[in-house]
Length: 183
Image 1 (cartoon, helix red, strand yellow):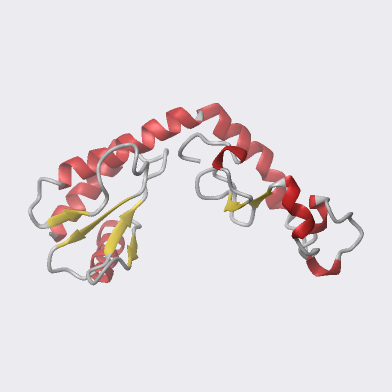
Image 2 (cartoon, one colour):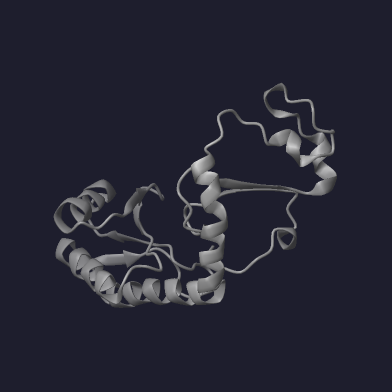
């Protein structure tokens, strides 16, 4: 994803995640991590009782298998590895910081996400004073072709912006110009 980590290093017994957001896999593939000692506590899926109680394969049966999506996982992981998590993280933070730094100077724009690399990477949120979240998100999409997401956060809500490694600095400048036109 966006930051370097290891699943065992998280110290979690269970982790589930999709692979489409930050690994770049097509929608429909995910990852399930279960600490080895905890596998035996999980019930087999769909009555699949052929795998031993302590074997993760008892959780692999989930209906019709989307083989085309699953076959893309190795290529997605290889491409992610080629880019490198460190470079991905730096790029995403740079893109986020660029638009945040520009818009933090605007008195009508409130940046909700704290600055700094230690609290967020790509994702950051803002709100425009006296504007409804849904209206801002709709205007960004309809008038400027920029996809953002309105989120509930307190009474006012906020707009989440999530650049990708594929976004250019020109895309970020377009975002800044669009938000300023709405502010």
